[in-house]
Length: 199
Image (cartoon, rainbow, N blue to C red; front, side):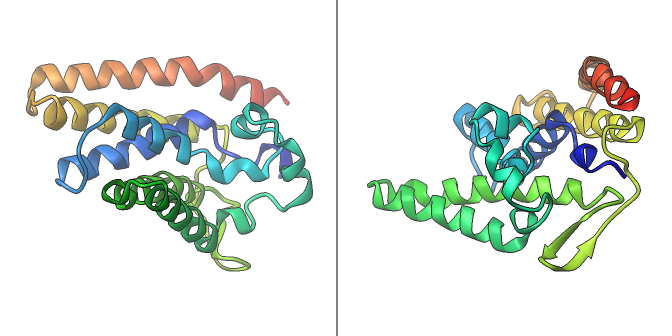
C-alpha cells in the first residue's frame, strides 16, 4: 500500500468527531455551543500531525513533524490521546477557568478519539497501545468505501442535530433534510476520491 495515501480524508474525521459531539449533547453530557463544535472538529484532525501531507500539518506548517515520526504511530495511540486531553484540562484550569477545564478536556478527547476510531476501521489500522494492540477494518482510505462511510455518518450527524439539538424530532422533514445533507457532503468530496484513485 502506498504510504502517502494511508490517511483518511480530513472531512471524514471532522464529520465523525462532530457526530460524536452531537451524541454527547443528545445524551446530556455536554451543552451545545458553536465554539465547542469547532474545538471538536479541530481536535479530530490533530492525530494526523504525524503525516506531512495532512490538512493540519499543512495549515500549521508542521510538515517536518510528519517527516520525523511514523504515521499512525505514537500520535495515533491512547498515550497521545491522554496527554493531549489532560494537557488541555490543565492549561484551561491554570489559565483561570476551572469550571471549563473538564469540558475542554472532554471535548478534545472526543475529537481525538473519533479520529482513532475511524482510522481503526481501515486495513492498515492503528496500534491503540503503540506499538501493540493493533485494530483494523475493511474501509480503504480515499476510496468509495470511505465515501460511503462519510455518507452514513453525515446522515446521522444531520439527523441528531435536527431531531435532537434543533428539536425537530424524527419525521419526514428531518429524515429528508439529513439525506440531502449527506448527499451534498459526499458529492463534494467525491473529487478527492477520484484524485487519489488516479495517483
